[in-house]
Image (cartoon, rainbow, N blue to C red; front, side, top):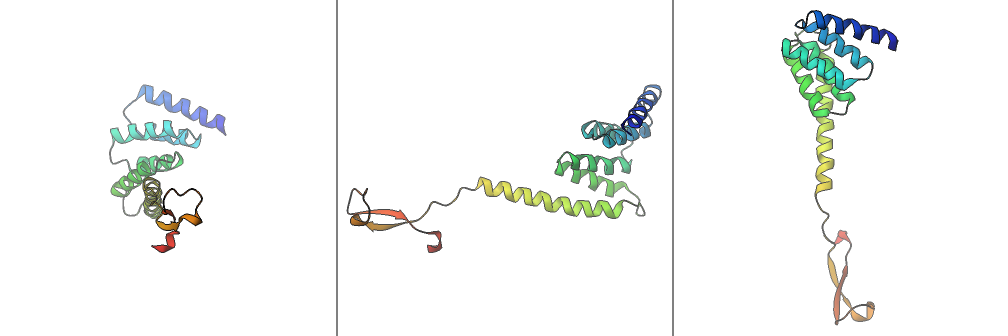
Length: 152
């Protein structure tokens, strides 16, 4: 199967060399890269497709898929939103793209929440007075010891 993809890539490369303007050659070469799990290369070709023809909605959907595979959730969300913007109402992948947008929004929100939790320092533990006799290392009559957070 990989050999067939390599042959397809060779054909698309020849086509692009002869006629560099048609967006289909870039789109299908990108799709072939994606099938080979070469998503960074695929995204480059989807971008070339979109540069030539900004309304080429299939390129946005495929670009979203490749960004997802690379873990680039914000970029995937942008691509799917552009797909929804340009795709006709009866396009077969429209419900799937709508589902992906909803899922990606949730995943991005969860990631933001995780990052926020890591960035917020934990509150210092409250302290209560302890008698000198209860603590061996106290220097005065009283010092403070940790209190469980349930006290708050």
